[in-house]
Image 1: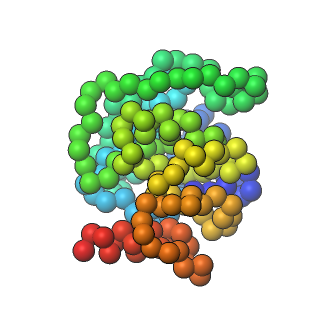
Image 2: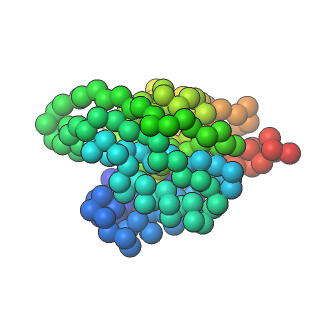
Length: 195
């Protein structure tokens, strides 16, 4: 994941994706693919937008699936609500709940696809419904606002251009080598577990 405010053009890319910019979607998908190992027998669940359905995250999931062989399951919904951006501007902290429109198909790994994590509430609500094995597959993170309690035991990392967010527990028993990125140590750790 890239830092939302600290890395040039990340914020702009996120806004362009929300506006349906195809080039920005491809750029975002390429960045996610570069930084993540997504097994072929994985499920990608796109995050619903404030409309209650997945929109740009569905397209992002499809682009990732084309390159990895993972399956997209557009099964998560919520009641329409004001956007998280509008909530932030207005100082509102509304609650929303996700629901499934059909059962989740079992897979080796299940990823929650979104463009940015700000506080972590969206991911936390999805994880509460789907289960603790849900893994965030996200382009960017706002480490100035994220609440780390939502990510205890979750496999994730922030791009090494800025390492301000690292969960204390990636769910593995290994020690992270300081000369190795957290993703690389996670990746090698998970490869060892698959043997």
